[in-house]
Image 1 (cartoon, helix red, strand yellow):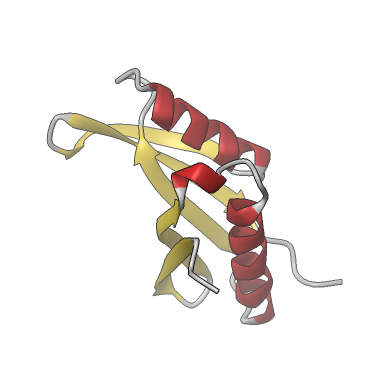
Image 2 (cartoon, one colour; image 1 turned 60 degrees about the horizontal axis):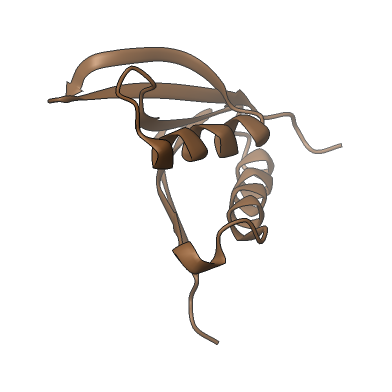
Length: 105
């Protein structure tokens, strides 16, 4: 009955959205909770006509095992790296990852 994860989305334009924040209780990682959150979001966005979804995370030029796992998760979810911006977040490179959402069939 307790929340175990959260996903916040930002809508920048009618046809695009951004996963602004996603977190899952660490003890419950690798149990499909993050996947379920993202898949539910994608279904809602597709139904609303959204075509592009992005997420920003720590870029690979600053090695960090936790964020390496984060990037692998998003890659498994179909996101692809678009650009690493070294100075968007001072001292932390920002990797922008994107995914094209297909309309519901």
